[in-house]
Length: 317
Figure 1 (cartoon, rainbow, N blue to C red):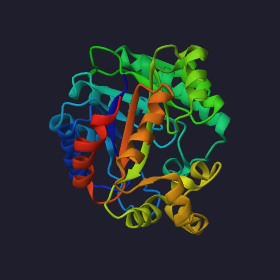
Figure 2 (figure 1 turned 90 degrees about the vertical axis):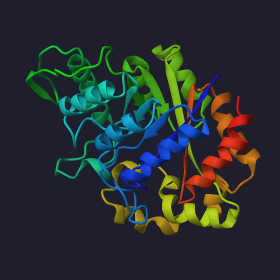
Figure 3 (figure 1 turned 90 degrees about the horizontal axis):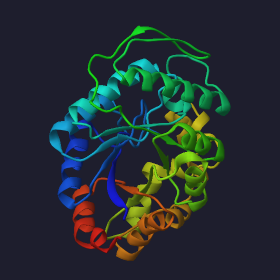
Figure 4 (figure 1 turned 180 degrees about the vertical axis):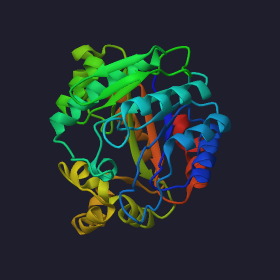
């Protein structure tokens, strides 16, 4: 049976709010946490972007739930040796309840130091090499590495968990999914696509953890909820590679007129219809996902958690 978790949005909320949401999630019956890792929000309306590793430290004291980044890009903005140290410390602080979700990233977050933003196939090469480095560092042994993209010299992590940090790989297309199946401890995607789950499992992923997530906007007024999503998260409906190549929040804002409120209403669960919320999450369960995370868009977090605690979670498989 799948587990259901809550997806904390670092783009939309500050550190104290995220910690309080995690507490409410645990009280409501969610059994795991995802947390996004961004340097910028997608647009200025979202308005936040705390350093995820500081927030994870606070979460480790506030709740007893498993925590995973969804997802960290360990290739450009932060060197994989530094990400490995952050992940290992997070795993120690949570008593082994931390998983590192990784992906090939977006220019929005990763180009800030002036580095060139590589094409997708190079980013996947970089990600695979980064994972190799991090896994070696998780052993606690000294690591020296001279590779295609990274150099590591006399690096050793002294604070490491008893078991290596599991690394789950995000994939939205066949190539990234293939990488996840070959080298990942699990697979992450954001659409309930059974074909991608099957590719992961048949390609070498087997029975490893498959996790997915979605965004909703609970509220008694569906039209208001649609407007909230349109204002804050219309970027999630942009087509193609725009989400990976646009460099600033203002560029995403320039494209917002392409997304209508009608499009939002057709593609995002809005309002307080229990069946709509249940069917959206069941679609992931039916596609073979092991963990399914949901994020509430907008300020009515308390209403969302009460709604899910009393009406939605009890109806899920």
